[in-house]
Image 1 (cartoon, rainbow, N blue to C red):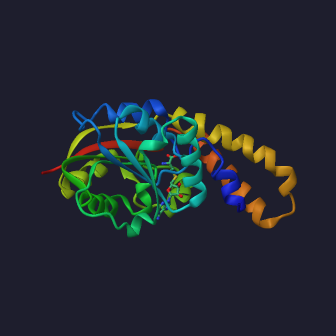
Image 2: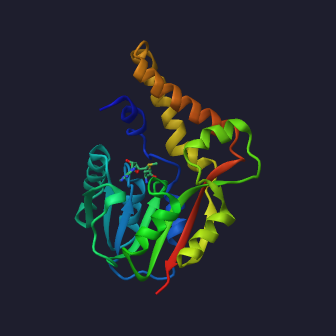
Length: 245
Ligand SMILES: C[S@@+](CC[C@H](N)C(=O)[O-])C[C@H]1O[C@@H](n2cnc3c(N)ncnc32)[C@H](O)[C@@H]1O
C-alpha cells in the first residue's frame, strides 16, 4: 500500500460524515420503494454504504476506483452479515457504464467533487429513475471572505461555494431540492481527523527520512491544522434532491 493510502485508506471514513448524518439525509427522502437499488458513488471504506444497507431493504452498489477501498467495504459487509445485498463495482465515476434510469437513489458522501459538482449532478441525473432521488455532500463556504490560508488550502477545488450557489446549480439542472444541512465540526473530527492524527503519530517515527512518506504526513498535518484553526469558514453540506420526472 502506498504512503497516502496507509494514512487516508485506513481510517473509519475517507472524508467528513457520520452514520447519524447519513440517517438525517436519508430521512429527507419521502418515499423509497421496498427494495430500492442504490448507487454509492466513491464509497471509500464504506461507513455510509453499510448504514444504507442497514436502513434500506435494498441493494447497494458500492463504486470506487481504489480496489483497497472496495476490499474494505466487502469485508465490513461480510462481518455485518449484509453482503448479500451489496454489489461492488470497480470503476472510475467519470466513466460509468450503467444503463440509464436504473437507480432509485444515488448517494455520494464527499466524493461527487471528483466529477465536479455540476458536471457530476448532470451525469448522474441520467442514471437515476425519473422521480428518483440523489443525496450528495459537497464542500461549501460558511462565511464570505475566507482568510488567505483557507483560500490556499481550497485552491485545488475552485468549485467550493456557498450553499445558496450550490442550490442554484441543483435547481438549474432540474432537480427539486428536498432539503439540505451543514455537517457539524464533529463530522470532520470523530471518524476522520482524530483517527488520522493517531495514524500520523503511529507512522511518523518509522517514516522519518523517507521524503515521499514525510510529504504525505506533512500534507495530512496541514489539512488538519487548517480545519482546526478555521472550522467556521468551510464545511460540507448535504443536499438531498429529487429527479424531476
Ligand atoms: C473523500 S473520499 C469519501 C469516501 C466515502 N464516501 C466517505 O465519506 O468515507 C472519496 C472517495 O472517492 C474515490 N474516488 C476518487 N476519485 C474517483 C473516481 N474518479 N472514480 C471512482 N472513485 C473515486 C476515492 O477512492 C475515495 O474512496
